[in-house]
Amino acid sequence: MSEGLFFVFWLAAAAGILTLHLGPPARLRRRIEAAAAEFGWEQVSTSWIFGGAEGVWQGHRVDLVRLRQRGMTQRVRLTIAVKPPGMLRIRFRGVFDFLDFGGPPVVEVPRVEGLQVRSDPPELAASLLDPELIALIGHTLVAAYDEIDLQPNRLRIDCSLEPGYFIDQDGIDETLRRAWQLGTAIVEVTDRPAPAQTATAPSQSRSPTRP
Image 1 (cartoon, rainbow, N blue to C red):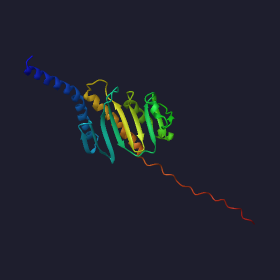
Image 2: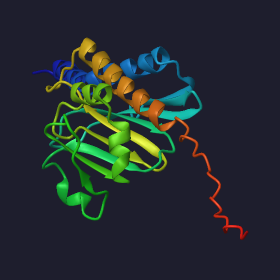
Image 3: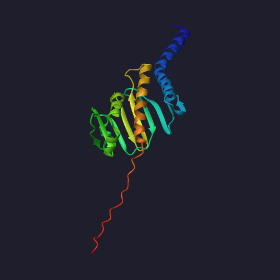
Image 4: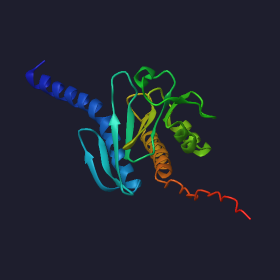
């Protein structure tokens, strides 16, 4: 093989490798950027390196990035800055249970199957997880490493994309919309003002009057 043909072959191989490694991440990055515009974010900035976007939505800082970790399905992570009245973590049973040592206590929530719910205070789960939100969680958390993590300063939702290296565009858009719908539903609940407590004046007992 002449040097010219070898050089052409080397360039073609390098272009093929770059296409395999940069094509799917670039496609996902473009879909994330389009989703930020669809969701009504303001002050949007994007990252070519990390394949994500960040901005502001109704006064909340928001961030949507691609996650790629060895041994795990490709995922997207939605982060919304919030100030909830406690902590809540929902993930599939048996996944990273050892990391929850000393964390919020496990609570039982009706109609939540296959998921472990940890809540501090425990009543936070009961007030947050209504039937509609439970249905959204069931449609959004679909793979082993998907989770909802609500902390005192932020909400984080990890959602898996379709298995496989080449991901369908419609599948990406559907996953992003499901994550956003779930995230905004949780934020709407955590943003509600606490019910006002009416103070009752202490009753004063009168001593009986003497005739």
